[in-house]
Length: 297
Image 1: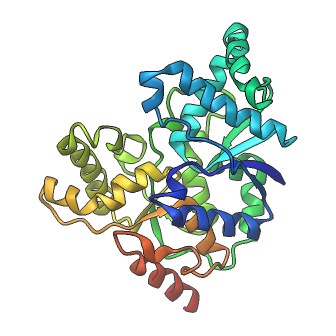
Image 2: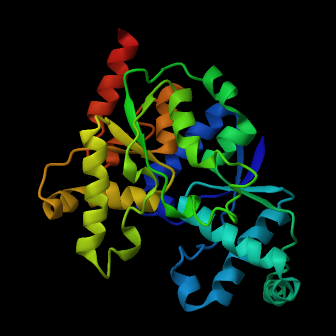
């Protein structure tokens, strides 16, 4: 299985543990990645608000780079990237005139985007391409003791039509399915499919942290040992901002936030240090200890 791979900005910046765990986990699963080392930021919704044409050109450039590799599927490890890429692709595929204008800009680099590229988040790939049964075959360290809350992030669920929910109606349940496949127990709570608050962190910090803190508190009260997310921007607000969120909602929070490739990496036997689980703001040692203790038992 060989895919073009766009790691996104955050996994190369604020969350390098996500990039490292993705590289190691995919290799152990036998998923071959051809990275877009010359790729550019998707814009995370910010650029498209100010300059939609620029955002379209930037994303089309990534699409064209993947196609230039001769590959038909581009995967990402960021819910926000998935949402932006899906919306841009829908616009380019629907509007031939607009696509021609964008391609005229890309032509300066000898690039051209043509409809037909499949764009998938790693979470989608695991369920739809790789298969949960095959994933289960690789589990050597079942996470049977772990109660894990899913956290999707906005951009991988909405708008549902553009994100393929009609063709794949269970995409809003894939995290739970993966959690179960690696032996853990999914924890259901209301905030799992709501916004983490990251988009408004800089212009309304209190509301942003209230959103994050509310979700964290609810999952913690439901007995979750950790949350798992396919979005590094959600990870930043739920992990890095968790101490501040605790202050805002005036209660104690201590809930580790795990990247999806880290969760899978733990289950397929990769050492936690290789997954860089010591790099989180909210310590993950309690999660690691619980998993290892269950294996020893």
